[in-house]
Amino acid sequence: MALHKVDICGLDTSKLPVIKQDESREMLLKIKAGDSEAREKFIGGNLRLVLSVIQRFATRGEHMDDLFQVGCIGLIKAIDNFDLSHNVKFSTYAVPMIIGEVRRHLRDNNPIRVSRSVRDTAYKALNMRTKLMEENSREVHISEIAKALEMSEEDIVFALEAIQEPISLFEPVYHDDGDALFVMDQVKDESSRDENWLTSIAISDSMKKLNPREKRIIELRFFNGRTQMEVAEEIGISQAQVSRLEKSALKHMRKGI
Image 1 (cartoon, rainbow, N blue to C red):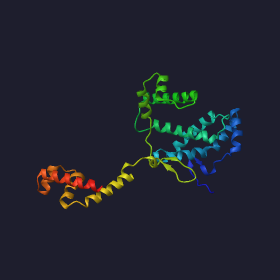
Image 2 (cartoon, rainbow, N blue to C red):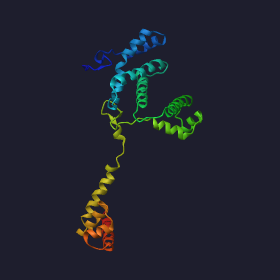
Image 3 (cartoon, rainbow, N blue to C red):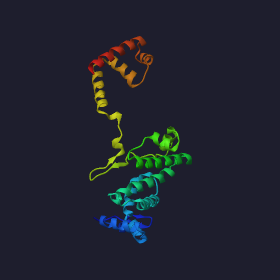
Image 4 (tube, rainbow, N blue to C red):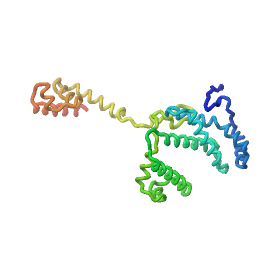
């Protein structure tokens, strides 16, 4: 399959090398042994991985060259911290590291400014969460993080929420060989629920059984938001008559529904 040329940070991405899986472990062993040449080659061989990760942030309004450079920092951190004793592919470990580095960059450069002290609290909480999870081999509660940092739960929750960057409804959250699953697919739309649609049909049908005056009163009261006094003035009857006709109309509609 032909690759399209993309120039980013002065690189022609169609000419970037790709490291095969069987070569990856051998090169990582050399890197752990201090081979700087193997390290440079391995970084170059994984730049396409960085490029594929930063594509998901293309709609954030950031310059892609900047995101690519930040992603490369995440790649280098992944190389330096990758544990060969774990039976996982390097890319499986590296992708979350690259994403995390890009998201930290976006948080720090968010137009919604967050104070340095709040960001510091959030990062301490995230680091403590990682530490406690490694020690306990389970997810930890916010109260445990607060206790370890000797801070209140409210301060930690506030800090963590403050550094969350806005996310697009079209952000992919899962992708396999088929169609992508986006954030918007996971958002519940109360206005389009089947129950609401059926109720709307039932109300419409029941209103057809009302006489013209009752139907007009219901439309003015519940669809146009008029008061009984306003309805009375518009159709030329008393407020008491409006009240009586409204109750009668609602009674008939309930039977229909």
